[in-house]
Image (cartoon, rainbow, N blue to C red):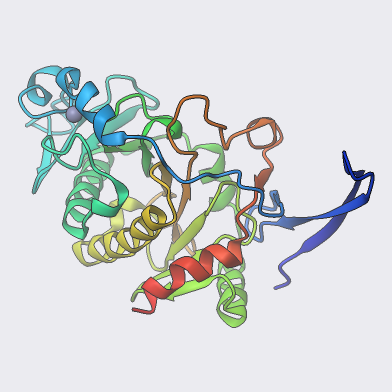
Length: 332
Ligand SMILES: [Zn+2]
């Protein structure tokens, strides 16, 4: 498989010097969905976090509905036909119904009602494993109760610039009869394309992070968001098919990445695990994870007219440099 890219050159007369300056912009095409992305020269579009998140956490904590002492009273329960207890708990993690539904079945799960403040570098494998396990149990429970809802995804808006309306760290689950646009596009990719893409990335090595057992991790060739990474889990097509071993492996890889993101100065991210219906032949369950701008007054959003309205990625973090910074953790 050819990983397609085109080079563009921009020219301008520099203010002050009057010199002609040329800039190279690389347009890359995603080998799975065909969307394109612009890799810009490094221009400091994603400054490291200098915001006092801990102070903001202290300020928002007294009114937080996800915190210990309030979560039981202030969050909605799941319908009885989905789960008789109304909530799903694993370790410290607790899953409940989303007050603001985005689909037939929408859930929210906190890592722990005790963890109102959870910087990326402090997310442990235990916390992620338990939280993912609540979402897997939710997807299974919904599919058993409502067989029409076969499209499941597990997602994260972590910290405010990511779209999260509540500070308290959590995951969100969607299980629906209708796929999202990206779920539909990915499920339509011919199975051989996934294999060819992963083969090409393994051979090149420039963006391949590693293989943690049954999951392969890479930096996206044509990212739609900053420091975007992808993972592919062969043999299953839905989060509802994740067993305990795979949940642990997934959590392990995610913790390596979130630790690296923290070291790179990022504190906000989005994640999506894009399920197709269970047992979809040839579709590997796949995941995308990316950083978001850091929280601070008058920050620059990483989501511009290009991403929102043209569906075109534009990043100044070259995928190969992201892979160099994160890959070492996968090689131990
Ligand atoms: Zn809280």
